[in-house]
Image (cartoon, rainbow over all chains, first blue to last red; front, top):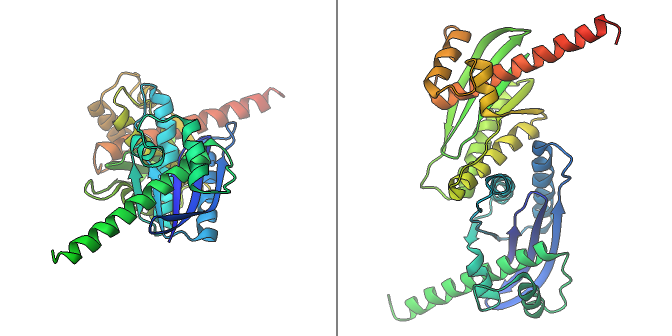
Length: 169
Length: 169
C-alpha cells in the first residue's frame, strides 16, 4: 500500500510517499512544491494544484493524509495556510483519495514518541524509520512523518479488526 | 462583458453574474453553493470546486472577482474560510479567469457609498442597481456586489486609459 503524506503551505508544500506492509515501511519518494510569492494568489494556488495533481497521477498512491493545522493569532498567515491547505486537500480528493487528518502533536507522538518534538527530531526519526531516505527539506520530512503516522494508524485499525474477529465479536 | 463575483465560504459560497457595458450593468444570474457539514472536509471542498467549475463552464464569464477576507481572531473559522477561498480562487484560475480581489470595505463603498454598510443595505443597493434581480440569499447578494465593484473598477481603468490616450500620454 502506497501512502501519501502532505504538509500543506502556500510557499512550500511538502509531500512524501511510503510503501507500507503492516508495520514495515519503505521510502518511495519525497519532495517540496514551491510557489512564486510574486505571482497572483490564484495563479500560485493553480500551480500548486497542478504540480500536486501531476505527482499523484504519476505515483498513484492508495491513501493520503495531511497534517491538521490550528492556525495562529496572525489571521493573515492562517488564511494563507488555509487557502493552500484547501487546494492540497482538493488535489487528493479529486484523485479519489480518502484523506486522513492528523494533529501535529499526534504526528510527533507517532514518529518521535513525544508530542512536543521539534523539527530536527522529526527529521532524525524519519531518517531512522526510512533508512536511506534523502530528504528534500523540512516540509518533505514533515510530510513523510504524516505518512508514517497514517501507516501506523491503518496498521492498528487492521490489527484491531483482526483481534475482534478472532474473539468472535 | 460578463463578470463573475464570488463570496467564498465553506458552508455557503455565493456567486453572481452581471453583464457590464461600461457603467451600464445587467443582472445575469446568482446563486449559492452549499456544502454538507457532516461530510469530510476534502469531500466538501471537492463538491464546492465541482459545482463552481460547472457553473463557470456553463456561464463562461470573461472576468472574475472575489472578496478579500481578513480572517478574525478565531483561527479555526479563519482556516475554514481560507480552505474554501483557496478552492474558489482555484476554480476561477483553472478556467483561465483573472481574479480581482477587493477588500469588503471597498465593495461596500462602491455599492452603497460607505465602507461601513451592513448586509441589508448591500442587498437593497444590489436590488436597486440590478433591477428585477431575485437574490438567492445574502451571500449571492455579496457576490453580486463584488461583481459590481469589479465592473466599476474596470470601467474606471478604461476611462483613465482613454483620457491618457486623449492627452497624448
